[in-house]
Length: 157
Image 1 (tube, one colour):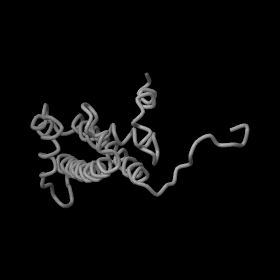
Image 2 (cartoon, rainbow, N blue to C red; image 1 turned 135 degrees about the vertical axis):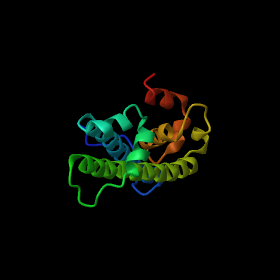
Image 3 (cartoon, rainbow, N blue to C red; image 1 turned 90 degrees about the vertical axis):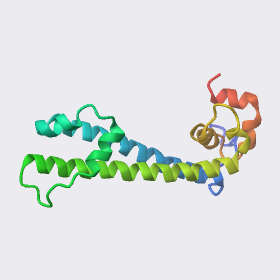
């Protein structure tokens, strides 16, 4: 502020909303890494040996990850096929771990958002992620979300 006087209330940094903010950051990172792992699996298939490529071609990501996670390559790969299976298994297991991490974070976010703003989560079409975003934008004062004007401004109306 040019006048040197703040117009708003500073974030306390110790409420449920700060907890939501921290969990959202971790979730965003896990989801991004999971997408990158799925992309990496697809990229590896482009140069995989033909028989392996044929076996995995056209599988949806979830099924592809399940199949690749169960590969049993040699402990010390000796050829391209074994090395590719080893790499696919590694990335597929990472994808699975990130899926589990995301689910854990979603559960915690769901609990915190429901505690912080139960009325918001109860609205039609408002899920945990959207409610969490609104809570973080509103800060530790979720009561301001009760104003239709404020809610509309957050939605860009």
